[in-house]
Image (cartoon, rainbow, N blue to C red; front, side):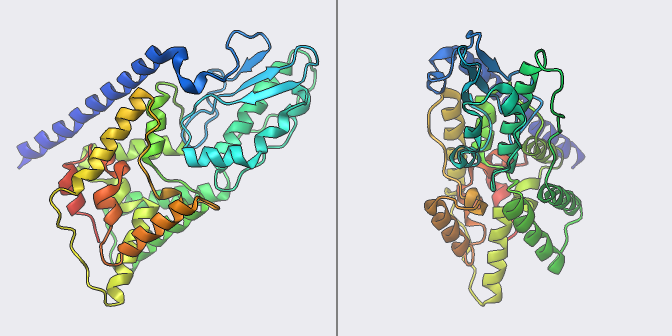
Length: 362
């Protein structure tokens, strides 16, 4: 038995090298694309002497997924900000769209760097990490630009985590303890409810395949963030124990499905077993297609209902997310077992992808 366990551990550890090869391949593919990347076509030129660039000097400022690089064009005639543009970053596309649509980044246009540097940092509801990181990066870049010409600079404030993030972090620690000492009965219900309320609804701290694909597209320009830490911990526990930490004990949407399944049983609904032999492979196919698309810079992104927890999210996502929750009343964790590409990716580092889905708690 000990020999078999050691063999399984080595097998899971070997998958880390495969994942590292994929990351290197993504970096190499991006370098080959170079300036031909469509996302870069409308960006201000790198060699323009009137363009301020934040990367890599301010990559220490991170959003949910990592650094949020910025380029600020200064009008040479007036000395005022002409445009603020953001190269591709690793933020979740749904979060980043909220930041752009909010208009919070338009406040800098027409101001001098000194005037813009003292503007307050405004959080965008539903995209707190991304919006704060973008504005902090702009602020630090402008402060650096005017430091040689201005004797007194406004006080530089470190990025602060709002209370929701601290509560979400506390819930993650509780989930970590529960991973090794699984609770039962009402304690499990409390854990599931806390996952939905704090990381899900309040702080919007959850992993998604879109997030991971963003990291792959931006390799190796990463920085420490909540998502990166959560992802690394999940992979480490998967390799070390052979069990999926995030999907079975952290994911807000997975927790909501498990709560729905328990509600269904309490209401007397008969559970329908998910006994299909081939459907669990679907999520692996979606994950593989998504990774390939990220490597080749294709626009394909597997659908995910996780942004259901965001305010004013797309009606399509709300509809599909609610439908999967309704299905979970009788089909426990239907999304997790058959459709979730993020879960398939995390299961890759565990004992066995398809067998792992059969062991999920209903």
